[in-house]
Length: 155
Image 1 (tube, rainbow, N blue to C red):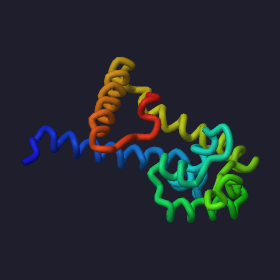
Image 2: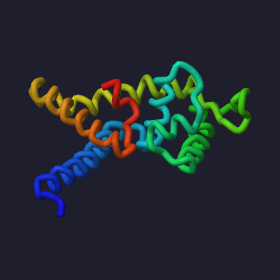
Image 3: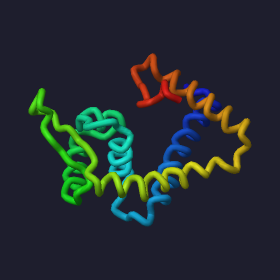
């Protein structure tokens, strides 16, 4: 049986995750075609130094290969993402932002991400640091079970 405190903690984490996703989506409301998956792909590519494989980007954002295929096809049709075969392995698709994709990301998505982060402005800095410490500790607890968060060690 799950300890009541542990059960409540798990439930709160689930509710916070869902609520934070809704909050982040609300910050891109002026870009109605920007789903969380599209935002993840575009911002993920913006953070790369060069082309990245579709599989690597999808894994980093917990997007299935099928979801990535659909997302990339749409972003490619809109001229936001470019797909090319990896010269070393033609089965691998390399992704990069087009100038239009880079412009959209820097002009709209990065500011939306910053607007979303102001949610924590009303929390005292000491509490924010403690929350970050606890969230990092929670991610570390998952590692022995083979669950790792992309960028976790960079926190």
